[in-house]
Image (cartoon, rainbow, N blue to C red; front, side):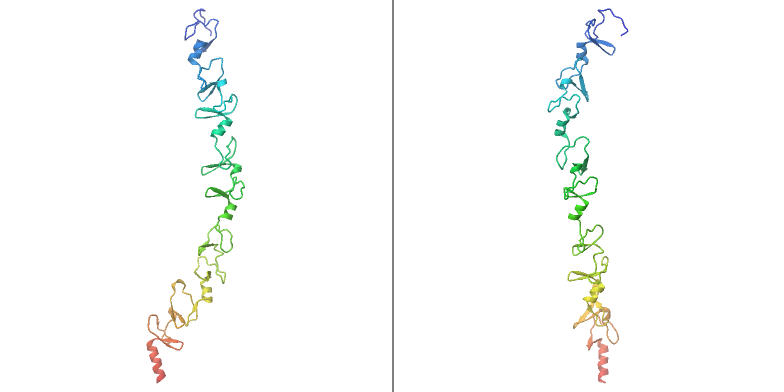
Length: 290
């Protein structure tokens, strides 16, 4: 050490025993005999709790130390020297024991995820790439789009086949929009008048025998006709009409045949096919008797 001592002065820094002709170890530029060095500086083995002497190999991991022969799996006791291992709760395990005890498992096959395996995750569940499959067709979904239903996932095609809303007329899937009639879904373009096939989406319509008709077709086919103007009386939109002895009138058409005064809510007299206000009926009667 580029220094000179009397032979009886070259001593252990700790116990003062002579080191002449003995093995020693330098620490912080001071010499120590083997025993003192091990007592003061040697690491304690985490397995056997004994010091790791200078003649033993000191294996360390995260501030813990082991003799080479003590560096073992906590479960199967196989040596971990030069082997991959994992740690859990300050204990060390061989890769097989660690996987069996602690590794995340696939929600599909219950097997563990090993290093390098691709993992699919959704809502707290995890699958191997090959296990993340459609609940219906069982084909792997991979990176394709999918739709969840209860605890299962489905590819888009199978979801449409099993659960998607279908048009009551064409039976095809309603992907956007649509209308509901009598609790049944329809494409807007499929919801048409039974007679003329005109679209009824957003239009006024009525029904006959559970079938929808536009206002024009319903009036032409089924509605009463006004005795005055002969046009259909549909009643759509709350339109009011007058009925008398199997004859019908629009409110606006129910007028005196002679003076055209509205007779809605008033007394009237019939004369053949004519309806007359009392004054005109009286005048007609006097003219006939004169």
